[in-house]
Amino acid sequence: QDLIVQGGGDCPGMTITAIKLVLEQSLPDSFIYVFTDARSKDYLLSDTVLKLIQEKQSQVVFVMIGDCGDQDHIGYQIFHKIAATSSGQVFTLDRKQVSEQTRKVNLLVIDKIKRNKQTYILHVDSKLLEFTISVSGANPQVTLIDPSSTSTYLTIEISNKDDIQNAQQTELIDLYGNILVNQKLQLNTNNSLLYSTIEKFQPPVKNFFFYIRLTGIDNNGYHFQRLSSTALTSYIRLKSIVNVDYNSIQIKSNQLYNIQCYMQSQLPYYVQWFKNEQLISQNDYPSHVTTVKYLIKPTEINAEGLYICNVTSTSGYDIDEINVDILAPPPIIQILPTKELFTLINITISIKCLVQSTKDYNLIWKQELPSSSLSTGNALTHFSPYAF
Image (cartoon, rainbow, N blue to C red; front, side, top):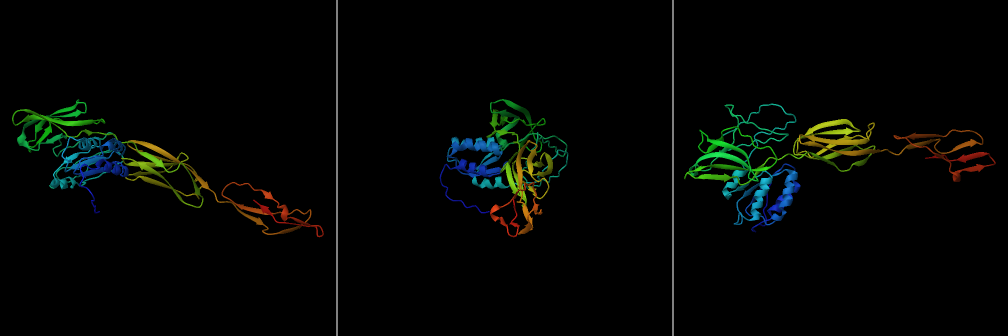
């Protein structure tokens, strides 16, 4: 779709407000890209945005081509905090480099309910600069093996080999300066810009922030140290949440009706419908499906009762319930004879009341006295039968 840009020209801008609006409208686990040439002037909304990020578990990536001349201002630094909290990044680029960050494609997407071992073929052609593997689930672990059956190592690319003599080690540092992982590096024999850890690399799996620090010797023989511009983190997926519109509804007996529950899940999930504690339906759904329906046919026996919607994913489960009451149609009554009945006094007669009803009912006979008359000369009683 075409985008039309209006206004602009002011520096700083309302960037945080824009992110807040997007988070409120987007689905959980969304990727949000912010393109701007200015720092924010509404940075006081950052706490609200950070809370939304934790709830939605969305990732925010900033592509910056300007900063209003002050990268130390809180209105600019808040972008780094948001990126760090959401496991996003901040790219500071020239305008001509922006298109490079948008040329990303999917190579393979797999949605699996059960854990098992399977081989997938991934073709990496010469046009791909890099590829990323992302796995979600309970305690996910990824081990990459190259064609020679070698385990995966952390690899660091040096932007300019003329600036350093040797990169010696890499460390993962938490926000308090504690070293979480410390591994020595070795130069890649096939590429002088790449360094890899000597031992198999296993990043922390706990839910806290950490920086990546690189140390070594520069070309002048001095020790150098570099720290990643943003902190990274591993985070636990929030459990699935289910809600319904009403916990009690009434349905007409001659009308089909879909009861529905609304999902918030960052992972694939399955939904079980129970009626009066009996399982009646079960289906699997991807995470982007947010509404699940179940059709109630009031004409079926025992259609009414307590319906429970149970949503379960690898991060947990949640339930909500709907009490369904079927509104029965009013009884259909037919009196026989239908109009008038003449009889002699002291003679027993039978008046039939035919009732059609899907529910139990009470039947009351009533004689309307104003409509009754007695003719003494002919000794006849004349009345109109009435029942309700």
